[in-house]
Length: 156
Ligand code: SF4
Image (cartoon, rainbow, N blue to C red; front, side, top):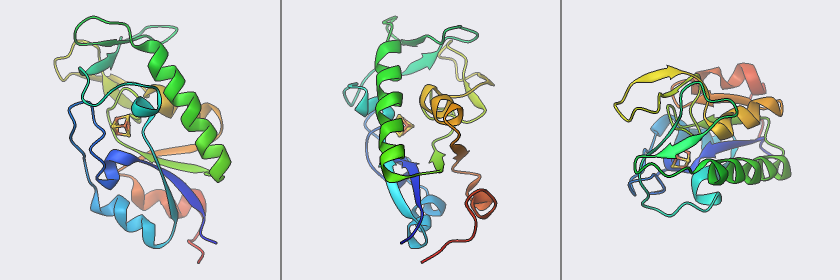
């Protein structure tokens, strides 16, 4: 059987982003030739409707807090979605996740700073951080070429 990797569902073309759009990535979709793709969306899984107001991590918050653009605290939904998705990854035996960059759930190494101005700060989305803490390798859609290193050659 092919190894399983988790993938942000919006990168596979699912219209699950906060504004009802998707972000299809050819490079990510082509991974389906060699790997079993396990689509996840922590925000939908955490109970947020689509569409919903944009959300950002409050820069420097410890523990992490997530607010929406209307000023509502949505931290709990983000944690719930992240932990439920981690269960999905464990059930499917995913050692790698390819997640959408910059998202407050899925972002890798850089996320919006909480000012809703498009400014980025170093950091990880809530789900991306939880997965990393669980020993899962997290890449974004621009790092798909690293997969052979992190997962080993694709098997069929
Ligand atoms: Fe995509 Fe992740 Fe946002 Fe869901 S939570 S829409 S998978 S970036």
